[in-house]
Amino acid sequence: MISIQNISKNFGDVSALRDINLEIKDGELFGLIGPDGAGKSTLMRLMTTLYVPNQGQITMNSRHTVKDYKAIRNHVGYMPGKFSLYQDLSVEENLAFYASVFGSTIEDNYDLVKDVYEQIAPFKKRLAGRLSGGMKQKLALSCALIHRPEILILDEPTTGVDAVSRKEFWEMLKKVQKTGITIVVSTPYMDEASLCDRVALMQKGEVLKVDTPEAIMKSFPKKLFAVKSENQYALLNDLKSNEHVYSVFTFGQYMHVTLVDENGNMEDLSASLQENGHEEVEVKQTDAGIEDMFMYLMNLENE
Image 1 (spheres, rainbow, N blue to C red):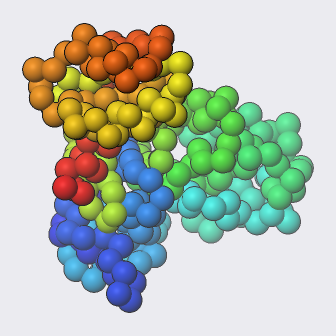
Image 2 (image 1 turned 45 degrees about the vertical axis):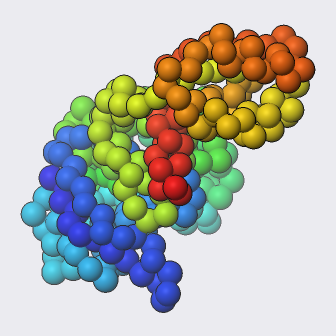
């Protein structure tokens, strides 16, 4: 289990994390969800012993990240946000090197990385620096797993790769989880949150909410309407200036809208927009997603 207790981290006058408390269960696929600057990477670097906290403590399977940092490094696999393997070594040379660092070999733990590595095996002689983004991602995951860690920590592993590679990567993570490894993954993509067992929504160095994706979506406290018209830009401006509208955010071809008065309904909202000259108005009630809840919590923080 990973226990994060009262963690704060400052960089000079900048407060990167403020009083973070989390408990991550054995074998769980846990997501840290939030935009750039939320504190996700800082928290992961604290968990991997790369930073020392200003306040609080973290234990990784009962090992203290400050007192037991050497032991933790032998039992944790880490994939940083930036590709950090040796670009002038080949695919197989990188994998062999990382195995040797931990006193192991590719053969010892090949069963764990087989599903991932076989996808890049045809390119095993190619230099890592010449791989595509998706292939670099698979190689980095293989290197993070080659010593059979107890805990796998992945910092925004799918940022900058195509949609197909993102889907394949999450399928690989689910297979890795079945081996009993605890996985902590950060992402700015709200759609990836639904693939985790539980998530922590983070913003500006704080945790806004922790729960399962399903519970977070069900806890949305207001009626949510999806609204569109022939002129989306004018629609957005009019909704923002409407005194009856509590919040409005763009979601694809629709605006997601909540009202100040919970007794407000679709017909009243549609009629109001048509009176303002909007044509082809469509208003329908919709279910909230994780991004809706995230934006709602941000609104509360700013009030």
